[in-house]
Length: 320
Length: 317
Image 1 (cartoon, rainbow over the protein chains, first blue to last red):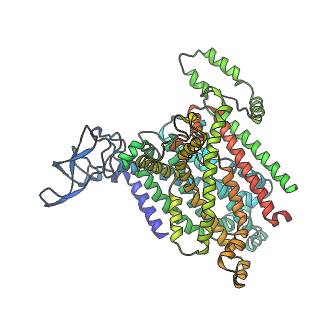
Image 2 (spheres, rainbow over the protein chains, first blue to last red):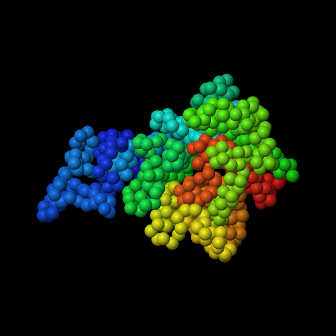
Image 3 (cartoon, rainbow over the protein chains, first blue to last red):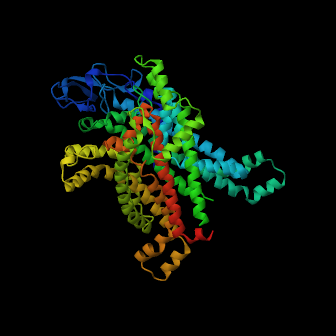
């Protein structure tokens, strides 16, 4: 739990600082270095003497397409040069995780892509939890027809296969729009579909809270609905809301990755972990350039951390 | 009986609601198949208008919904504009392919998940097995499928994509079965591996809950051996949530494999749906959504029936 949380915080900080950490811009192309493997960082030169970390220049063998190090040209890695944390001087190139077919640095794109993928999960989960909190509280507190109609509506939403629904809704909206609009659209679609589970759980909590003695007592003293909800009932729901949001985030990150992978999320040249992965889908690319799968492994690490945290929270949350 | 009747009626209402909702969505969407045609300079506006007229696109919303609902009930899902063919014949073979894939995978996953979950529950606080399950849970189907493709290329043991080899029609029937099985092996394992951790976790949770009940303690105190206790006493008591889960996995038979099908080139509903989505071919999109929703509702209904058989508390209500 603590480990997972620390990992998540570190990753999110790194992603927030992407413009300063990434050696290159996400769209910067190095046409001479298509599919370059991860740069090897040396500290010994040929004669065996020690230097500060440096990389050799690489040249592509046009016949086989593979890269070879040029022992003559060494480029020391510079810290805080040109506005980013690490970098090398221009004819050399520093690809910590290799480069893609356009010679774009995978490491930089991974950091920038995480902004889309992780943020979609985070905001969409908050949206779902928010809608769930609002509707669940209304349904649980006021009962009657409000409750009936909201819960029936929820059943309707639950009856739909979500990935199909996601794709269908995405299909019905314009396919080619700006990145920002796609981003917002994705958040609204993903977050708007998943509110049912949190709403149900919150409703159950509110239902039991409103019958508790202190709420009855407060009502007896003439407390208004608003006061009762704010002071006595909503505090009960925080545990469920936080837990549900944490459980939803990894699902939503996965949803974003899937959507972008299928070409329905944000488009080139803006990276997202999904559309980066789709470039690795051609199997020849995957076998000869395995570093293109790095976004996939990053997804696994993030999901694992969220699952751990979510599990720990679920075990701690008191259920009513 | 009234319970079953109520559940049945409920399912019908859900289907009705979903169909109206999805039809409405498709209707409200900006742009359709014709708007792409209209932008084509080689098509005259009159021709597009005539096509719209013939397809009945100018009728009022309730009239179009009525037409569509009635013909859908007869299994006729209209005409696909993008594939230029009736939707039904386009759908059925792909439906079969998807069901073949997912039902095999679901069966395998359940067969593995129940013993695994029971075993995990029996040694509850030792976390070695749980860590493996959580790790599996965190690997998206997408990555599993990509990994399987790498495996197929590197080992050369499995065919890449598709359901049958070239020259399938000339093979003997035994060879045909073998061929399909060879093509199925990888996608089925990917799917089953993706379902397994979810199912096993649920089985484990249900078992742990039932093991905490007083009857389990008293059974243990009476000296019933561990294996018998788990399988004969606790497992039946843990059945309730598992049956509901079984209904869900029955219901997602059509929708669970979309990504795997797309990545691994299985000729099921997934690739068709994706193509229809990008071509904005709402006939196909609606048909697929309705089919998988129907199956989901059906799965829930089956779960309700099974619960009615298995759980006396429901019958008493």
